Image (tube, rainbow, N blue to C red; front, side, top):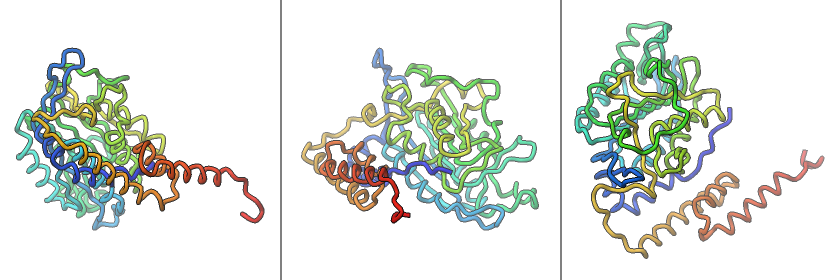
Length: 365
């Protein structure tokens, strides 16, 4: 299995957020998405909230540990914070804790209509033999093949997830599962769109969107491909398929469905809830160049911004310079094409390429 390229950018995003704290705090107050033709607001988000749950340290041997989950979830938290979300992250919940976290999150944020919500789960998932019910597996869940009743008492069913999604009044909610389930949570009769929707008033209608890492027949790898691809879709703008400055939930699903199978044997599934009133809109992420806070963003001195950019440049370079990794060097050049260390990065990249192109001699062997 080929591991998705892991840029150092998500690690540096937290440093950027700390440096630009006045901007970040302003963005969390709201987001306005204007129509490109008229400039009138299509969607107005007043609050953005994300609940991230990762299960990695399982108690029962039926569920292998997933050691990469904490680090992957940290990168998701970083990129969502950059997009103006208030993020809550929880690791290794028991069955009782998992249910409470989900219900409490909806109680606090799910009943304000202008809010947008993200629920991200990374861990084991399980689908029943008849493929009609999917479950999120907490760390204390037993083997469902041996203790079915006890398992159902611990695991959080997709039926419960969907009930909460229908009951919530927030306009837009996006559910992402780095786990595999059957496609029963989606609109089974609706064909997947061939292209992303244009920004229009229709996108402002209510929606509950779901994206899973694969279907019920596929096994999620111990080291995720889905989660890094999600991070790159937002952080690097790869999910903006129509290049309008926004990543919609539909674009995100299309991008992940195209990209993830290139690196692992799984095909993400995506769609909307099987409920007409909650399937008409589309979740929206605004990329940095188009992200507009509902409240006025305070002015920041240009000298301060330049100093902050130089700091980020240096922190990024410190990590890259000792790696001898061509992909990390290329990531640095893409992020800082005119950076202080751009010339050095190009020289190192050229030397690494020359070294890899050299024919092996008998001494090398």
